[in-house]
Image (cartoon, rainbow, N blue to C red):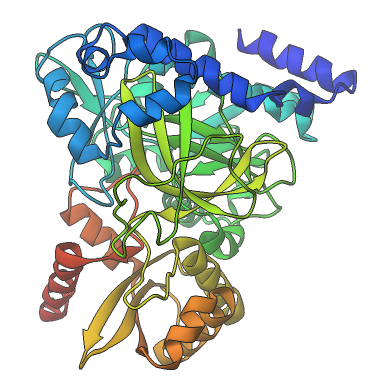
Length: 514
């Protein structure tokens, strides 16, 4: 089957058919209305559908507005507390038809430490369908035809899932990889045996050992862990770059975190540039993917099991802690504007309804329904109105790394209060020499340019900007201590409250061990 997909894609390219038109949705609003109607119809006899009278919503003259008015907004905690715990206990027809047998364990960068997100059979089909679309889109890139017959290395969670007699649980990557269609196994590395390995260091060691036997053309996964893997392979086999062992490596498919802060140090491990392709594959579904060369944005998946709503991410709709206010303004795909920031609500074929996924996005092209992820609703810093987003922070870290010629692969920032005033305390993960005072001055300069609110508050309210440079291993050790080591886990960019204190306590322990 993969051969036929690639053959068709390559024929399109050979005939110079503009594939961009193949992916473009002519009427996004109608496509979304069709998705919502299918979701409501299929779930109308579930407990959730009966509670909110989906049948009445379906009969409404304006279905999507009736849906938004009748169904409340959910975050993970509320959705689990009110509904999903019943599915976890084996009850059927809770928020989606049938019995749910698989749950994705999220990385838990905020909120609950372990989140159980239902992954239905319909969702697995939807993810597979979108994955095939993305594979098809590669024909738009100028890759040699023989590249499509080589292997792809996917660095994800273990396919050996937890089973308690009622359901399976694990990383979404482990669930989806364990359900790969047979026709893809020839191309997939590291293969089923290594993919089942649950101990992360052991899995990395196995991949390093097998690396010389593989002809890898594409890698798929989180930037930080691929950087570690490449470094280990280069060191083990005394190479100059990763291309000494994988000369045909041309594609890097990444997602989960912004790639920009990693790019400079990552490219030092390469002999020639890669084509970077971004995806938005969350535990809740495959929301978007990049399908046009040279465009640093992703097209939303508007016709495959996902209904989107957008809340303007501003002071009218969110408080200073990133909590949504009552009765926020809610927009649909045909009402959003380019250049503005929105929090995302999704309703899906996994029984997720008006669910705040926690990400904020900005539309870069309404014509192509393309977005960039700008951060998290709760992972922004605003002690006194500075409104620093993760997008601001990523750009500042990228510029710092470039100017100082160092690789800053991890970072986090805390807000501090002192004598009625405020400060920002940054922790940078860097294994090269980096002067902390100079880094603080430069970060401060960059952020003043990137964010007007920050520049204003820096005049009076924000009295200090401090930087502490730490070895990268400190960040990885902390994640291991939290039980979050592995490809699907991400270090939170902003730490607040108990999580900030836990990080500081951990650093004190490290200091005492010196």
